[in-house]
Image: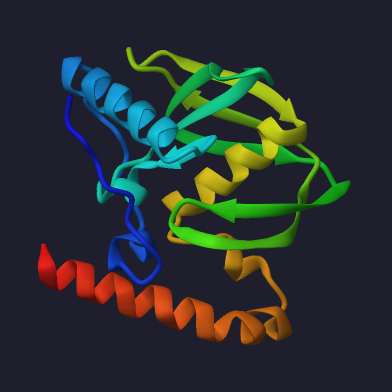
Length: 179
């Protein structure tokens, strides 16, 4: 199993648009398992490939099933996810991100979405999602487009976070130089 470090705000890979997944083989299955491991290891409920330095259209989601056991999760792997429809109704909730540690802010997103994606074998699916599942999918798909949750904040909120974000960016540069 390959161990992936989560890229932090300021790393250029987080702003780079991704390439589609076009090969569905054992290496994709191994990558999916590695991403799920990284997501759980970092206490996340979603992770996009750019967050581990891979500019591919791939996300994993691990929704908790049992509040008493944080490792009991429903795992979803999605290649080339694309939102087809979304509700006009929106919901505001706190969001955080493994790539922007220690910062959470309220973000408004559509309450319901319809999306298509491919599984690890390349089979295409269309599903509908709402609640936290829809929110996590939207958040992770944003990563595939080089968008971070702080981009959804008002200019005033981004200004208030400027110092924290700048420190993350500086720390990211140092980590890149050390690697």
